[in-house]
Length: 134
Figure 1 (tube, rainbow, N blue to C red):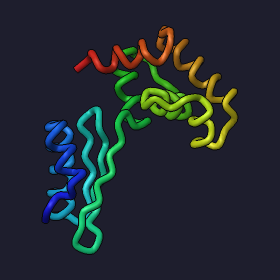
Figure 2: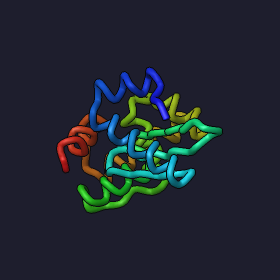
Figure 3: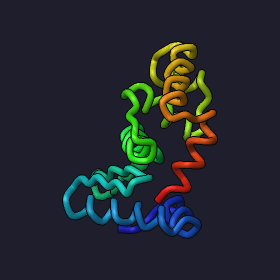
């Protein structure tokens, strides 16, 4: 099985991500379907007629909620976790609202509740703490 030019470029530039993607592909080729979660990345790989499709999400909602619970010793609701995960990926409130099918004001409330629970001033503060922790 050969890698696409995009995969090769990613693997070249980001060895950890390239290794993660390669592990997904190898496991999918062996089992037909594979899920990997290394704490930061969640990946799913599936074999499609001789090719392997790998989907990777950085800071997926489940990963964010688990890491937040561990670091901050508090839990977020499912919707707070979804909003925060998308916010940490750089999405603005309007884009988050569109993706989740809610109003931007609703996203603002969920993020405000998450920030209050985490005693954080905003996305940047939470992201800095998540990135700094092992």
